[in-house]
Length: 257
Image (tube, rainbow, N blue to C red):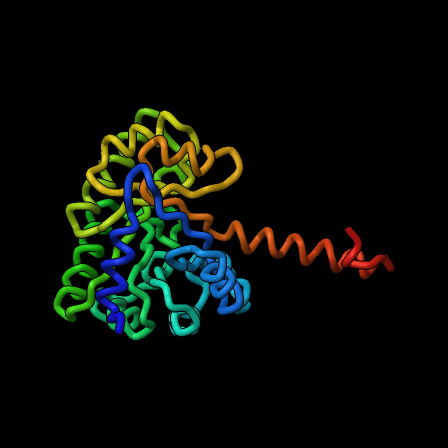
């Protein structure tokens, strides 16, 4: 029987630079089962996809108990490891955060360094302390947690390209020292910057796949170890549903080729 810690070991081992773990993020049980059925070795959630299905906006507007419950439903529905996007931790202290996450059965978590209340970046040192607290609480509980630390420098305006790269590297190194398994510089789009981050961070690097970003094959060639689609699949599904509804509203068949 596969234990939670076995699943964490499987998930961690899938982060291979040059042979990346590709995550087509899910938002509910049905989508998670589709992800598993398509052969993906793990399921990731996306808060920006789950939140609207629960009736909330993203950016920590979802009550934590509802987000953790959604993650738990997804975990129960699939047999592969699950890693959860849990934004900035919903204001929970590390011990409570770990207790709630462990109860879902998920073995991985994204934690971002954007402050959902101010909209700006959290001080890097404070974020590193929070990540270290999560790692310590997980270790104390005997819970092997694959921690993916999001670096949001490129999500916010300000600074030259060189300054933003330097700050992303600084934050990433602090988070790695605090216990992060992988680093997620979200919204990085150009190959030279991605390559510089891969070379400059002593950890697997996660890149968000979206229009304008190198292809999965190209990202693998740059040494990326993890590729996430975030809310991308949810938005594709929503667009297809909207198009079908427009067809019906216009008196056309939604089944027409």
